[in-house]
Length: 307
Image 1 (cartoon, rainbow, N blue to C red):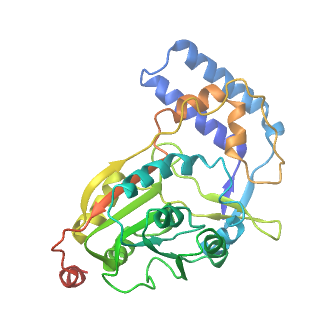
Image 2 (cartoon, rainbow, N blue to C red):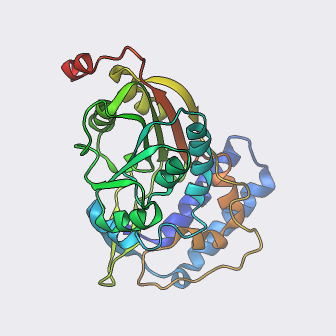
């Protein structure tokens, strides 16, 4: 179980903003305003409501609850990640493409429009139902990232978007993605970054029974991806870390009060301290996007022997 309290989050945001000021990015007036705001927040604890304990849930359960709403507009992470991924895909030759952890098929749809023969794999039947309706010409299969239902050296392009944050270790999954790639093939990965620097927050979802559950979020260093990818023979072609927009929240928005019995909605909480929020999140990467390629002489036998 995790315990999330709205005041704890807000004081954390204020603390990050104060550290930026302490490092010289903001002046005395900003610092004094933040200290005064901390006092006001402490005095407003009753209005913010109490904390909530949330249990961990399996990936399948979390995405079952998310399937109907995942494609709704306004997902800032997708808005930042998707244009970069599509720009990379637009420059690749067409062939057979795998959308691994395809979700609702947003990248599979783009791959199909580019002329690829598309395979989509996901662990969530509910997500696959949405994807099949969206891309009727693709071949969608239920499976997970550790054992893809795809033959070895079968595809020219692999996309794996916003999924690796849920896996405990990168190497086994990247090894499996490499297994299905043909020599010279391309691997495009996107992943979410922490909310604030290296700090990551679990994804909390409302469940059909009225309870809440969270999907663990593993925030990784850029070097963690390289440490897993390079020994597998993957070569870096591009790496981007798109930043969140600034300002992140409207400085004039009225403070929202959320139900005390629910886990705190951090995006609503930002209205309680907009200046601190905008300072804390400024220049903070929201995602990382990688373009790797296997060399044309890559030997699967050698790679498997190393594993």
